[in-house]
Image 1 (cartoon, rainbow, N blue to C red):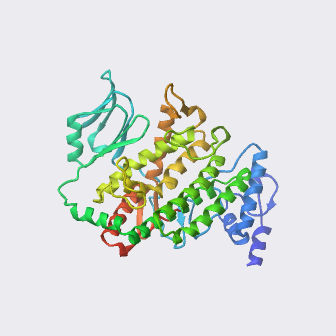
Image 2: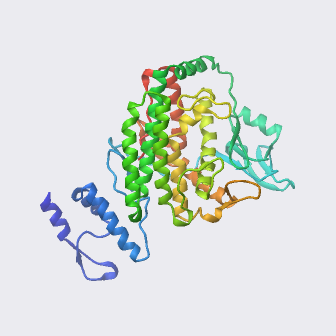
Length: 436
């Protein structure tokens, strides 16, 4: 093996722009990362990233943080559009984002009205100006923010055609959801949910799996976002989170488990606050109300995700008021909070982090309003976040679940179905997604 590596490195290739030949592997060669994987240990790879990052920053450039990382097959990773993990999956021709035939329609113009006419979905302003006109067949769900009116005709059409309707406040807080439940009998499913929630042993099996899935994905977010300046802070946070993760199987009560989850979240958000650009730095998670732009973006994204999660649970035949990890509360859909935990870092946190680093979300996208405590996202900020969220949810992958492929949105619905299967028969178990 050493002889092969020496032979590869002794080869000469033409330098850039026709310069004199130089020894080594040419940049962009598929053999270059292969050689690195064979020759470098994990610690050496991390040091190589640090050295390269420092060198390119001196030139006024920076590495693509989403494409540069030291990963392992155990954790899973994506290289040249292909997913790799403990079990190498077959090639997937449609790995890239594919536009679906039906999309979500987000309406946030205050005073706007949504109606249907002649097979078209129309959004009109308070002045009766047409803001949007699309075929009804292209609408999968409607998400309304604030004072947006929905006509009786649209409501009847939506319920008859399996189009979900999610209603949020102007600030993005979830208010309610409408979905055609059809004629399926759900009494047995509700009874089974109550039985799982009331059985402490069975409930803890599911709750531990939820917390483990969430913390593992939080660790991946931090690891993928580490930069030279944040190696120490992020590395310490990852170490603490791994320590807490090892304690999850030992938790014997929901309170103990929530304590571990909360401790991991503090480490995670403190590290995340150091990983965003300096102009939007924050010290930790703040909500109700959020105190900075990034926390406002996180809350807004979680609200959108919550609406979809409720839809997925309802579609799977589960009652959105009976939770396991999160206690039942009149003001929140507890099981949706259970299901969405692993999708917070997988989708929303990743979207917000990437948007801040690309400059799509900046400090100017957060504003304070007279008489309102906290920070709200501007219209441009909401649009940037919604765009990134949709692209992320449409990203297709394979290997996150055995013998299953599709968009992350499809995986959300699949996880809801797996929760329903666990409710029917706890012996089948439930696990989080493997993030590539």
